[in-house]
Length: 215
Image 1 (tube, rainbow, N blue to C red):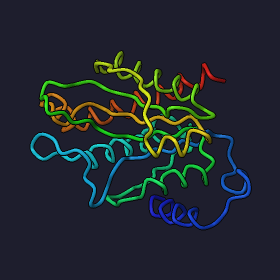
Image 2: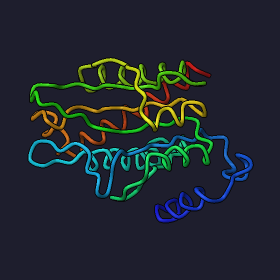
Image 3: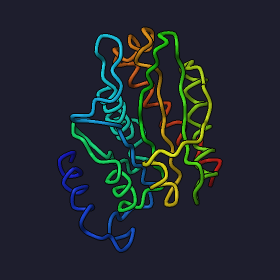
Image 4: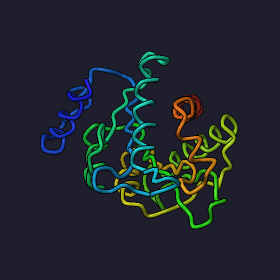
């Protein structure tokens, strides 16, 4: 199934999709999870050489697993990358558009020269068709991570990130910075499989909360 989705993603870059029904015969919300960086782009390098690209891919894969195991595939979840490969920023947005995503979440980790820096940040585009929904989704995510895991919230902020500005006119889109790889406590947290599971669970619960209120 993972290989099939990877092949399908490559096809979507060159084959136009004329209707949602042609792509998926389902009424489930399509959620595109974008694990940042990949391949030659490691992203942030943290304590003991921990790499951002690996942490966010682990979280993304756990989202897919838990959606299937605990949520009976409530969502139709696709990843912009399933392996340690580099996908261009433009193509990440193209994939979301081709899939006609209902939600786009780009996963990242932060880094700071201050080893005590901690917490989560959520970014939304400066403007766009779905900016209000994006802001609300961002607040739901930061609220869940703060209340359920204890992360310090550094707020929902505006930014002109390419993956956001190229998707916000098609669906609610956020970029989530989950903790600081330069922080020892965060580093140790990411080493535990149960922590990755907790992050994925809270993300799924936040999506449910967002949909309950926005419907």
